[in-house]
Length: 535
Image 1 (cartoon, rainbow, N blue to C red):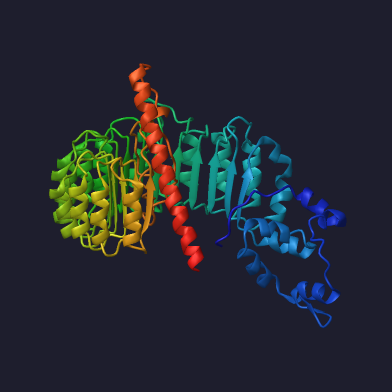
Image 2: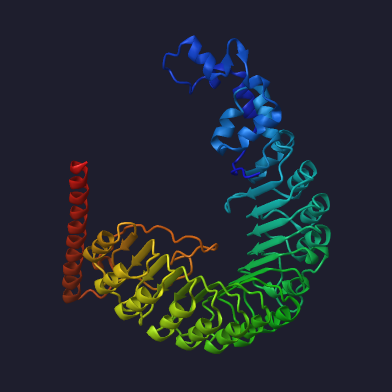
């Protein structure tokens, strides 16, 4: 219902607040209010209380449009508001420690309309067990979404009982739990409406050839999204993946084993995939080329897959003409470069978002991407040794539709910023981070030249390059680059050898960085003060 999640309190605590007038009025304002003002604020006009005449449905709509904290405060106003607020809450997040068990009946008597539930436990605490989960499933038969985090006391038996009671479940997300294949298969066998499955660090799944396969079950026909993260034996989900004919999204993160064969089988039988994420997997051009059978593919993430090369990327480009978002973290292996990107530029004209990390493209491929991909709006270039002023000038001259640009740890200087001032007419945001050649003066000049352009500059920060798609600001929905956080880390903070020359050099460079920062800051202050005096 569009509500924000919250952590519900214990019902007995709420009853104490309601029955104790002194407690309820503790946070009231001490300002003097006339009787007429008080009546108006209470909705009483001419001796008539209009708020009390509102139907419960209208009151519930009001509660659903306010934040979680305000909803809690409203529930303390009177018994009716407590009841309506509880009946209209569909999303709930609870601290799932073992001591929650005795409060479950009262808690879900009040919140008996909950359809989205999150049970999260601290990893150092004892979580709820099977009995608590079964009680919740009996109280919430209409549950459609369940998130389990670090509920290590749940077993296969508890998950099996839950699945039988909540057959309408549409989304299951579990992380750091210890139940195994039997519990997961119970969910897949009974929840025929399941659409999204996310599994992370499920320790109960055994490894090796004796591992029990998971799936397909009745849920295979309805599943649209599968996400597997950090699993020792993630390939035991192979039968489920292959049998999910309506699967649209497949995300595989840091799962052990060779995935080429399974990806080949998947691409042959599940041809409707729209989004594929492969991160830190043992996958080669064989598995990547197999994905070219998915002609509807729009989003592809290749993150730290060193066995994938230009040939595999070209195979995808040959057949996946609808590709809109491409993220590549080449891990500085130089196995993906101009050749693969030229294939993308020539065959994927609908490209809107491109993120390149640890990849070394040149003006040759960037020029073709800019010329042929007329809808390219978001571009991120990180950790590239070949992205300099000439490449930025090429982007500025040819990327007419570009709106957001992120440059990180590239040999770009103020000359590149000058090129951006006269190009990319639709550019609204530029983020520059760890580019030693770009100074505060260059960023200020770019801001002054294009007043409507948001320029975020982070000063040089030398550290181990381990970029990922989250570092460059391309979120999963690809809609926004996060704002930069200004930070100063001088070279003197970096560990190195302890010889005197190195120490002196670090101190000098650190002093220069501080002076540069102070000068830039003073200039900003003076500009803001002068503008305020003019106003």
